Length: 99
Image 1: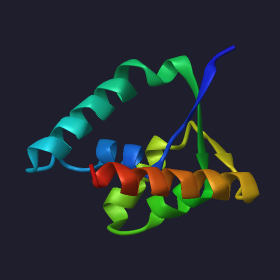
Image 2 (image 1 turned 90 degrees about the horizontal axis):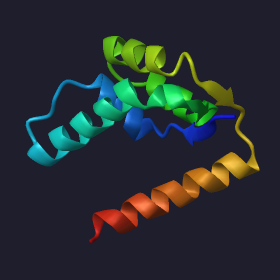
Image 3 (image 1 turned 30 degrees about the vertical axis):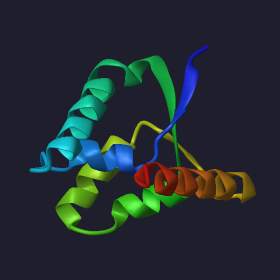
Image 4 (image 1 turned 60 degrees about the vertical axis):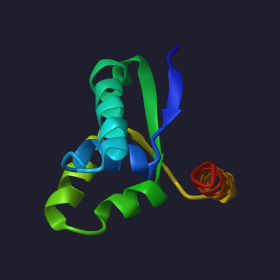
């Protein structure tokens, strides 16, 4: 049985976007893309309806790229558990940005 990975919107965004001029962001994109190419097949991928909705926003061309990336993932319906996970991810990202 494969382990599961929850795909947060930032992961999909890093893969779909053009390489950033910011070296830190570009490095994050490169690492994320490398994982996507070499490792993702080892896992069962999941994303929530919230991630799917976020992938639909913005430039239509970029939105199509993002949606194609999550085509193979199981989309989880929004529920209380998913909303709690989303809150924890946001809190963690805000805290990590303050370091």
